[in-house]
Amino acid sequence: MTRRPRKAEMDTATDGYDKPSCTAPQAHLRPLPVDIDPRRAGFIRYNEKKWVNGTRLRYYFFDRNTDGIGGSWVGPEAQKAVVRDAFRTWKDLGIGLDFEEVRDREDAEIRIGFMVGDGSWSYVGRDLVEFVTDPNRRTMNFGWDLTTPHGRDTALHEIGHTLGAPHEHQNPNAGIVWNEAAVYDDFRGPPNNWPDDQIESNILRKLSAAEVTGSDWDPNSIMHYSFGPGLIVHPTGYAGGLTPDPGLSPVDEEWVRRFYPPLEEARDPELRPFESHRITIGAGEQVNYTIHPQFTRDYTIQTFGAADTVMVLFETVDGEPWYVDGDDDGGTDFNAKLRLRLYRGREYVLRLRLYYADVAGDTAVFMW
Ligand SMILES: [Zn+2]
Image 1 (spheres, rainbow, N blue to C red):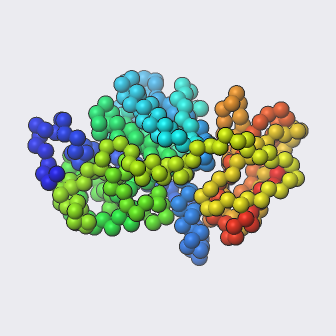
Image 2: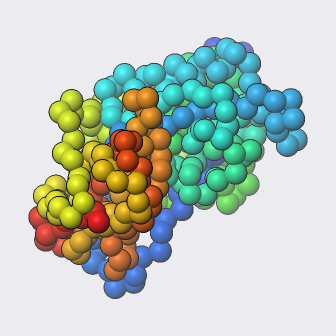
Image 3: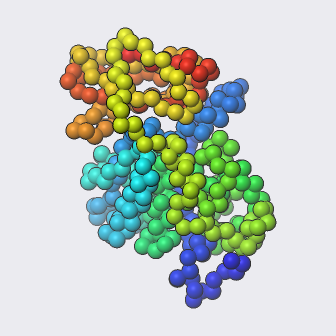
C-alpha cells in the first residue's frame, strides 16, 4: 500500500493509518539507584508493570448519567460487547489471568469509559491500581466506534496495555528511523490532532530495551500503530507505510503466555508459620503458596536474600481470589514484607514473582 485511500474509500478501508491511534499515558517507571547492576535493572524493567499471575482483574463500565466530565462515559451495549469479546480473546489463549465484569466500580481494577473524542487509551499494567485509586476515575477510554475491524483491534490493544504491554513501534530493537517532520505533520492533523508532546511520547520516544516484551520487533503486534507512507525511513521496506495484520500476532500470544502461563492444576504448597521455603525459580517466574491459618492473629510474611520480588496476598472467597495486600521491593535494598491479620478458617494464596536474584536459589520466603 503506497497511497492513502481517497475520502470515498475511507469509510470501508481497513488500512489503520487513516484511523485514529491510541493515546495511552506513559508507564510510571520506578526510580532505580544510578549505580544499579544493569542486568538487575533490566529484569526489573522487564517485569515491573506486570501483574502477578493468577490475578483476577475485574472490569466495570461506567453506568451513571453523571459519569463523565465534558462528555458521557456511558457506552452503548454494542460497544461494550466488543470490549467483552476482546477480554475473552485474550483469556482464550489459556493465560493464568482472569477477567470478570462487575457492576460495582469499587470492586474493579479496570474502569472503562466511552467518551467520544477523548481518544482511546489505557494505563499500563499495575499503574492501574498504583496511580488510579479513585473509583470514579477511568483506567481506560474508548473514543471511537468499536464495531468496526479497527475498533475491535482497538479493544484488544487497550487491554494489552492493561496487561502491561507497551507500544511495539517504540521498541528500540526495531531500529525504526523516523522522518520526524513527516510524523509531526501527519499526527498534528486529523484524525489524531495531537499536540507535539503526545507525538513524542507515543511515537518518537524509544523505550528502554528491557521495557519491551522481549521481541526483536513485531510489526504485526496488536501493540503497534499503523503508519502512512513517508513516515518510516528505516527499515526501507516500510517507506510506503505499515499496517499490522488485524488481531493478535503469534508474538503477542507468545509474550502473554510467557508472563501469564496457565495455572497448574496441582495444589500450591502450603506455607506454614516458621517453615522456610527456598525459592528456586528464575527471573520473571513465579511461585504460589496456599495459607490456612491455624490461629487468628497478626502475621508477617517476608522474603530473605538479595532478590527483587513482588509478593501479593489474595483471600479465596467462594473460589474467587480477592486482593488483600502486596509489596514490591524491586530496585531497593529491602525485602518484600507483608504484615497483616489473617483469620483462622479462611484460605489465602500468596503469589510471589521474582524479578531478579543475585544468586539463583539464594532466596527464601518465611512466615511468622
Ligand atoms: Zn496504545
